[in-house]
Length: 150
Image (cartoon, rainbow, N blue to C red; front, side):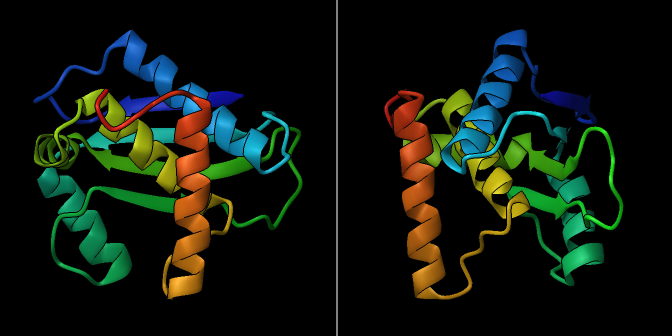
């Protein structure tokens, strides 16, 4: 798998271990979907203000969110297909990790799985879609032995 990590925030350290975990999560998402890991993904870490602006500009929702997914439109063939871009607010992920009582690493892993599934076409706009997506997220996290208390 090819990936690019862009840390555009300075409130939290993005460790080598966190980067490794993110790559493992994306690879597991691809594996669960029966896809090879020969994809390119970019992951950007931002603060709440930057993700609020992106959310406003791209989704018309002027408030912060935890993660945004930007799937690559497959209009042309590349040697390495591009899955898309993931943008995570580390600030929001930290807030949520404290709210849910688990580690920041666990929250980042979950948000990565959630976003990667969006890149592969999953959504949660209705109850059926939401159920399918949540079950996939649980499978991925369980396969990686990433549980809520971690």
